[in-house]
Image 1 (tube, helix red, strand yellow):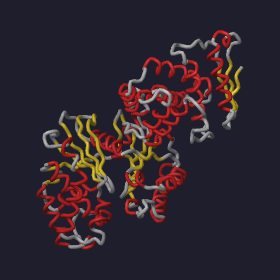
Image 2 (cartoon, one colour):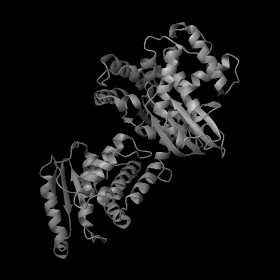
Image 3 (cartoon, one colour):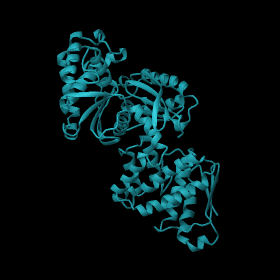
Image 4 (cartoon, rainbow, N blue to C red):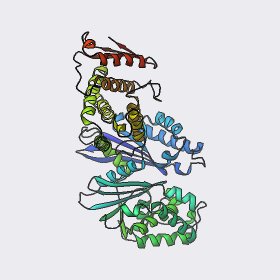
Length: 494
């Protein structure tokens, strides 16, 4: 990307929706504009874990306002991510379909560990460079992320289902603050976070940082009250706890530095923060400037560069971990990408390169399930990808990758895929053809092979003598023609 390019991150959090716009300046991203709206989708989940009509509307209305600001941005300049509330919501597809239409850009529901990784990237990029071992804590509306890292490398990441909105609703439902309610809330939070003690114990980090939301709000209140600016301490948390007990209800809390939108969830947020301090033996924590949205911006920048895209490293790790035949995977990937270049001559060079990389990931992982089963390895591989915590990937990206792995062999009717998605169909066909052409696990002779397509008709052309030289491959290709007859697409072989 050129210096001066604008990038935008949309963070659909459980408490607030945020839009961060920055300008690229020699590898750094400088803020241009920041918008935040308190949407509180986290308290809009009913007992069946469906977003209520009011919560849906609040989210859609906010995204409509964000969309006005994003008019003119190109897809490669924007990424929108959603976190715990939409991970939980049973009717999230209803929200996301309309949200995509309103915003004009797809929304990725990211896993808890991926959220943690992006939070760490946001914090690390806005801190001075240092070799210190960092503990980063982010208390959101319905989840809390803990990360251990050094420089830009997040080493240990986890997400726990405890947050300011969820705990305020559960333990302070009427906004009443009592010592007993705080005790119950803190004990419950420590019970959820208890397993973190082994991985994040004192001694495994040098400095504790708090990102965004609750910790930033607490830091502002403590600084306004005269406590050590730039730090959240145990003493400060005890003081704030006493202030809330003295106020007795959330609506009577009058504290300098406390924003109005944070008042209803300060009780739940403070109880979780006190639980984190007590469990991990934290004496003081520094509120950080970086947050999830900043991590999304820097990750968006990395995705444009194959040398720094964390997804490439994730694919490589998965392939090694599950004993993939790397020679065969690379062979299939080369052939598949060669076919895709013939088929997608209309793509801009940058788009074609991006589409080839994603097809290459599917090729590198198409045999990932072989460690479990020889005959059904494609099914096991797809399941593994659909349920993996894979750094850099959103859940929709992993699902699309799993569909390519599932569909690279066998019947096409089993795929619950959108066959009107031309790019997906082209990638799937190229992967299937590459697997056929490389079935003997050696480099195929495919000089003169041509793959063309128009509308829903595809044609594979080979030299006349090729079929006589490779009768088994020719047989498998004829079967492939039959397989596509069961779809809205047609494949012809000549």
